[in-house]
Length: 485
Image 1 (tube, helix red, strand yellow):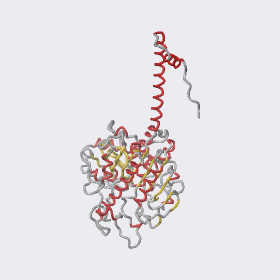
Image 2 (cartoon, helix red, strand yellow):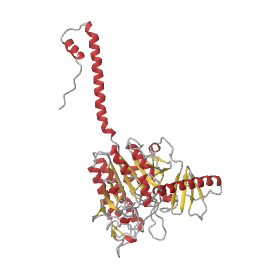
Image 3 (cartoon, rainbow, N blue to C red):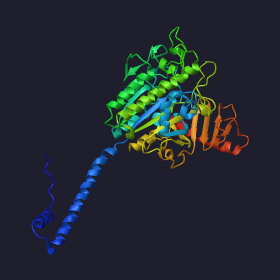
Image 4 (cartoon, rainbow, N blue to C red):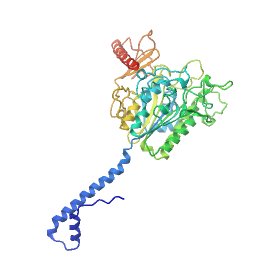
């Protein structure tokens, strides 16, 4: 044991001698100085104790990102849906902020996920397509030059886990544990059968880089793994990324002969809507799928609370793109209300998504944010909170939105830009300019009064159309050039 500190003696000697004799006026100056000295020492000691106690408070926050698949803007109770039962997600909204005007980087899941994890537009980061025609294990997907959020967080001592849908490349060098995550349990492809875990009738479930067979409903399995990760790492800063497979629509390519082509969900969630396992109403089955996601959110929140991490943990819930509204499949039962269109389009229904952020003691509870933001803003927000610097030589399209979310500033974005297939669009303040193909005419909408994109104002405001067209053209040119480097 180290020797205790040795204090200077004069003041203490004086006090000891003073206590052994009667008061004497000549001793008072020395006594006064001694008391002042003691008060200074006591104050410094107290400050040291406070500093030690506050040292634990300087630990950066934990982050849990719950990334739903194809959940629409109008699918949740807290976004106005009166048919669905999502009490846990609604509670999360009551305890945090609902983002009413936040966009993903793409209307399709693969580039949307790449944009979230890099903070960079799909046009810029080199992954701006859905590589569904290729075997997942052969896809490089997101170029290896791109740095992912968990790779940045290692500098701040974070441990990171990914549990669920990966879908940004699974060739050697592209897998989660090769791109910054310490743990991975999930699937490589864009969707799997919820029970058999097949994609294109091939097994698609991995732990790390190894193929595994585990029985169970995929949403429950991924939630189990995420809860276990939180419990095991409660004493260190962690980043838990839970990209659900739900509520992706059933894919015929994943079905064995004779298997029902239904939204898949355990019976207990169908019972919430008065239905049995034999229910063929796809709307009811879809609502039950949303309730199964909600139940998983509740389990995550309970695990955080039981681990006494509520005040230290930021929880983000959002969707990777809008619900799909593709005709002819009989599965168009989700809701992007009141937005136009859906997944794989650049209408608002394809790129504006539900997003809730709970940050205790930082973001006011039961609040809303109507400023235009981007899912790409999450990366710089996380890094700022972790005191990790953004790269100096790499353009990050996201901008830390924390001051916007607490109501202190307006949107940090002068404009938001999109490209998907032949479609291109720009959102600048209240204006949205969109063109479906190079042969189509430009359409201009004032989203402040026309969120449904039904009144084309391009002919009425040609100068606004031209300015936005030029800004979009210039941005796309520069971003595409960077993607080639």
